[in-house]
Length: 177
Image (cartoon, rainbow, N blue to C red; front, side, top):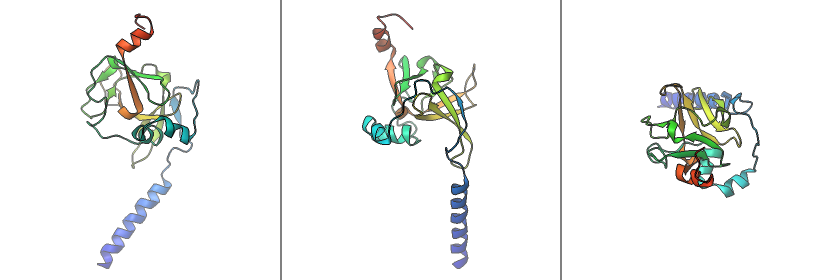
């Protein structure tokens, strides 16, 4: 019994040591979009503007459940915007069925609209995708997507706000962008 307890204690200590040692966001390298027209708000301001789920995902780097989110199965035409600042991020023309249960895209509307960060959480290295204007956490990008980019931008619906193409056209007086 004491040996089991000692082994469990060693495992817990090893996990704790790795968690404390592993870098999380501080001084992370940023690639991609620049912070043009940057939006900075206090934690309280973000909490008052977003739902609890939007706040947890976009401001606290959470992840929503696959197949149980707003846009994984959305097939309407339109633009997916940042839920925090409204910046256009992805177009439905680049959305595809990845089978992951999250909305997936093969490219952003503009490369400068997203920022990429190295994410070394969960004992692995991934590429985090953030809004370049307000730094909202959107999801991650992987190199297993379709051509022409070979990328899969796997996004959280809670970090996005979908604007149907009809609403977009109405704003511009009926002309396509």
